[in-house]
Amino acid sequence: MKNLKVSRQSKTDLNIEFVNANSNRRIPLEQVITQIKNDNPTYGNYHVSRTANGTEYVRSNPDSKVCNNIEP
Image (tube, rainbow, N blue to C red; front, side, top):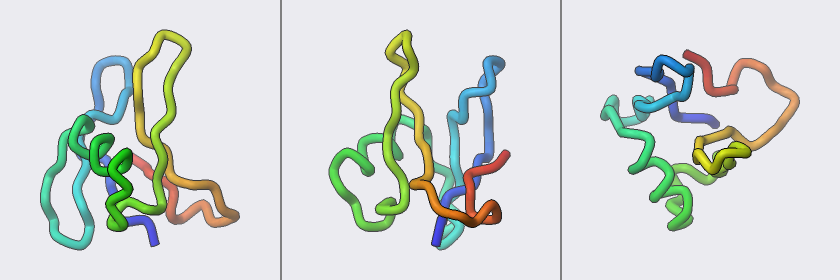
């Protein structure tokens, strides 16, 4: 189950803050990226991607369900 919801986006539509749906905690992008890179099982359904200019962002692991994608 995906447990992150976007709570804030930048002017360029980068998701910069999330809410953990299990704890209702607000988590900045940098912290989520660190947790994913450290293999925190809470975020096992996500991975970090990088744009052509090097900006890192969070993506949910693909599956066939639209309802569990990260959405604003």
